[in-house]
Amino acid sequence: MIRPSSLREFHWLVAPEMPPRPSFESGGDAVHPVLRQVLYNRGISQPADLQSFLSNHYLQSRDPFKLADMDRAVDRIARALRDGEMIVVYGDFDADGVTATVLLTEALRDLADDRRLIVPYIPDRVDEGYGLNLDALTGLRERGANLVISVDCGIRSPVEAAHAKAIGLDMIITDHHGLGQELPTAVAIINPRRPESEYPERNLAGVGIAFKLAQALRLSLPDRVHRDESDFLDLVAIGTVADLAPLTGENRKLVAEGLVVLNEVRRPGLAALMNISGLQPGQLTAENIGFAIGPRINAAGRLAHAYDAARLLIATNTVGAQEQASLLDELNRQRQTLTRKLSALAEERIDPAASIIITGDPQFKSGIVGLVASRLSEQTYRPAIVMEQGDEESRGSCRSIPEFHITQALDEVADLLVRHGGHSQAAGFTIRNENLPEFTARMTEIAEDRLFGQDLRPGLSIEATLPLSQVDWALQNNLAQLEPTGYGNPSPLLLSRAVEVVSHRQVGSDASHLQLFLTDARHGGQSRYGGGGLQPGHAFPAIAFRQGEWAGMLPRHVDIVYRVGVNRWQGKTNLQLVVEDIQPAQGEGLAS
Image (tube, rainbow, N blue to C red; front, side, top):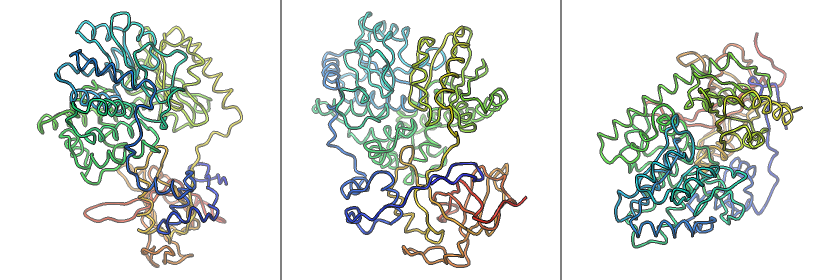
């Protein structure tokens, strides 16, 4: 069911109610009815699937050798370790690439006779760009490298891979990005998206694939293993969440186990980063990775060099860790300021009604263009491309909407591009400046064709409808079993109708947020699910971020879409509704 006309003009997409299913009910009466509805919405309706999802234990039996070419990669690496060859782990400058680089470097050093022969390499975003680089590969060969293993990159670098072979470098490519028309030449190509791969999880992040390679090596070389496998899972959690890999299947279980390790704080660098970010060890969630840890790690590659983030992750002493954490925090502050400035500049230049937003400028730094593109896409609900224009070439970053597969669109104009790659809703490319006019025209034509006739407005997928009086700790504790939540496994949106607004006011340093106190007089305060629902005469606290403009305009009764949250402040812990959207209840309108 679709309910438009909300304050934020979202489509309200309310899931149909779950039909009675005895087989599903047998999964356990302890499961809250709202949680059962949410799981049903997400395709989990059998007792075995229910128990597997809720148990959330990592599937140690999932065989890494089911990934195509894994045996070839392990054989070549084992020979390099045995013969004392120099092995380079070639990564990427985002959080997924950095964590993958550190993970595989640490795993190989654990297996090596001489740790110095395992060398991490992360390209400079500005000077070398994304992916394999011809000059970098030549330089590594001149330094004595025999084998290069890419992580989180390389699948769309056939020219660079051919160059590596020509100069005597063996290549093993591990990547999770979409395949190009031509696979690179390499000793092994490990990518779960390959058609011949038998591995059941196709959505691993780059760091997840690096972990599977490390796992396969450790299984094949048990006499060389010293460290515990769990030592690497904190890195898997950070890279997977920061790269927006879907938190379903194996990814969710890897992140869940990784959060356990993160909360144990085994790395001095992460301890320092948590401290400077105001995070409490023992209470870390996937959301904290996405909004605090990930952005600070990414800031290094955006404004300085990703090695700064890698140094933080491998730091072994407290002083060095604190220095690196302070650096990343400062870079993140600079990133925030620059993003606001460049976003404002971009907004002045675009047509928000266009089918696709395309803009570029020498001022748009390559490390920030992706963030600006994200903002433009969110504000206009259109695919957005933002480019840093150089003297001869421009580097672009793309963000898109579910209705438009941006990488497939780039594939259609590949003849104009130096290189490109990405996913359905995020991609990057390099282009010669003389091709920009044709690129803009053809991409606009593709977008107009694909999006013609569609009502382009974001939707809110609402998973259950319930009276506000039935929101209580019993519900919250049941919904917590969905954790870790994030992309692909979001914290569920709930709908309560005809809620009474007791009071509301603007809050925040710029008055951009809306604080509300709500009650549900129609249904009383008793929760039918137990656990102490909203009591008569008491109001439920709620916060609506970036909706302060509605202060003074709300009617007495509203319908609200929200997530159930937990607010910890000054030693107190309370339930709080995080309101995503509001609309007047039936028969009521906004105050003028």
